[in-house]
Amino acid sequence: MRYLSDCFLKGSIVKNLLNTEKFLAIHELIQRAPVFSAIKNLNEFEEAVFEREKIQSTGVGRGVAIAHARITETDRILIALGVSREGIEYQAMDGKPVHFLFLIANHPERREEYLKVLSSIMRLVRDDSFRNFLLEKCKSDDTPDEIADTLRNAFFASLRKASGRVSVTG
Image (cartoon, rainbow, N blue to C red; front, side, top):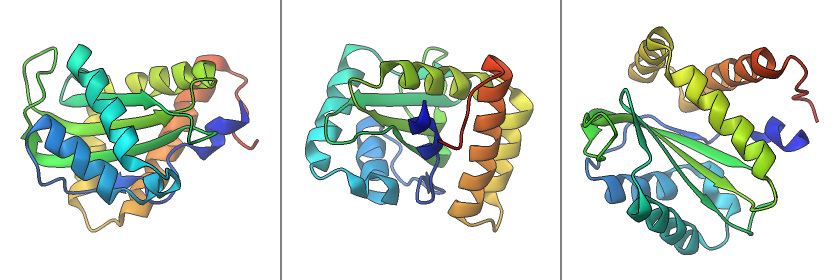
């Protein structure tokens, strides 16, 4: 599980997504999130995310989407969060616009870690007070890296609470 320590690294937050259409917002997040610079072929990653979205929207409701794709170009899980103040038309389960677009790149062999990441993010975003707190942090003068630190701490607290034994130090 040592790869979980790489989640929500610096460069994983984009505070102000400009695009309000799903595929354009995904493209923007991929291009603007420095965490994805580790992926050599961003076009291939983007196409994999698009193909997944064409199967079924990853808009889970409550203003949240968790887009993802499996790629072999990374040996770890990479996560970015794009925040849209206006909202993204995402065909979410509840029909409401998405304000938090999480995007996950994971290696096909890291399925167990990916499922832990996904469930921890879901636990966090189901909490209304946490979503409101995160939105306020994104509207504040906090830097994207300060927001990433806040999200990282909440993420690992969620992991520890769920399993009681996850090591995040490697």
